[in-house]
Amino acid sequence: MYRSILRAGRLVFVIDRFTVIVKSMKMNKYTRAGVFALTFILLGSPSDADRLFEGDDAPGSRPEDLRRDFGRVPGNAEAAVSDGPLPATVREAYSAFEIGDIQNSIRLFREVLEDNPGSRPALFGLGTVLLRMKEYDEAIRILEPMMEEYPEDFSIFNNLAWLYATATDPDINNPERALNLARKALMLAPRNFHVWNTLSEAHYVSGNYEKAFRIAQQALRLSREQNAPISRQREYQQQVEKARRAHQGM
Image 1: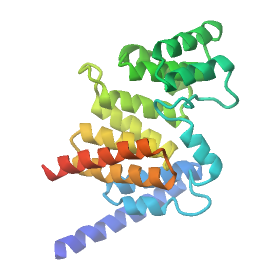
Image 2: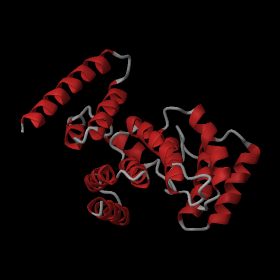
Image 3: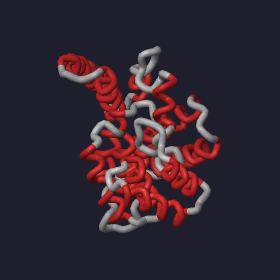
Image 4: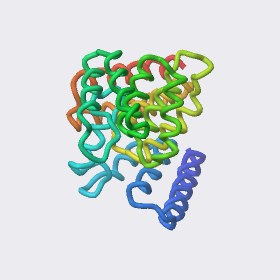
């Protein structure tokens, strides 16, 4: 009992010192909140992470933030990385992907890129489609440079993290890199349920089943709070159960 009290006291001291250091760093409030949240998760206290995001100024709690977060998810036809209206052909390509017309989607994205090789939404869309098709090498060639060019865009980090976590090619699968990228995505979008689910999967494939379970619960909770499609909530419930079974079987 006394050892537990001593450990708890040390943890409080560490968190207190960490808080002082982070607050002294030059970060905007959203990035700082993401750093705190990730730290609490790693320390095993997701409830403390939740409390960081209460209130009107919480990252992701404002309507415009939620619209942004819903609009940039792996496999979503509205996932384009764009600061303005999408060109008609790009919209058509995303719509084709959404209904499962993959080849037409690829053709349309490539058509846009022939005229505009630097089109951000077309590059992101093509990379996402290729990821879903397990064309990992080409997806990486597209998304890795985008991550360097747009370091504030969580969706690129998230999709790459998902790629490295779920790739069936052992030469591509990289749980450590998946964890690193998912954590960066979380710091950029700490209330995006897709990112939490990706982080859960990254922990799962890394063998961190307890963390995968806790984080999957958070992804499911956020998806319900934000009225995600029922099909998406079911996927996250399955992730919770998968991680729970693995954790209980340890």
